[in-house]
Image (cartoon, rainbow, N blue to C red):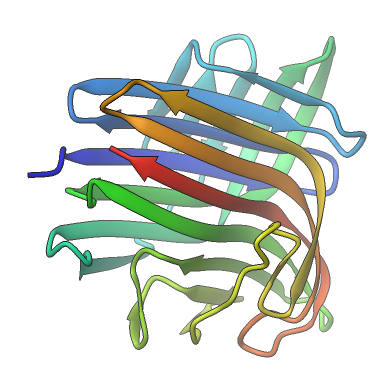
Length: 237
């Protein structure tokens, strides 16, 4: 039987600064990480001092944020191998606090995405994912969670677009293999967090660039501006 996996990932995005922090466990193996990306291409990252709890992101001496979390939406599905997996996504979550990197303190007043996931994902799992926030052409706030390869059954997926208080499931989306585009959104990277792990029984090839988005969301909403991440994860876990 595949190992039990669970994780919490928080991403916060704006035109001035983007960040993520994660706390995961694959079987008995814990993993924590954080990263901060700046528009000039600098990326700061690490794995120590990460503490995630409801409504809070703390990375000792680096990140201190308060989140206005909500109920989000949940999705439970069955993997190709027949295993049950679960996720809850929150989109457009307000985040406030401060970040200290590169000898400078940044005040954060932005929005983000919270991803909680759990289950016995197949031994080999591959997905592409995009999450972000922005502003529509009419000035309304938007957020999105788009995926291919996990929780992606038509009509029963985790693909969502938040438009103000409205939440819409959208049709399957196609990602460019180089992560330069998803559906009608073009992506321009700032900086990339990547990882290539080979522990014999556990292998992971992971890319997660931060950057800016332009174009049209899958529900037809045109973006005035958008910020977030693309991701590709190929795991043998």
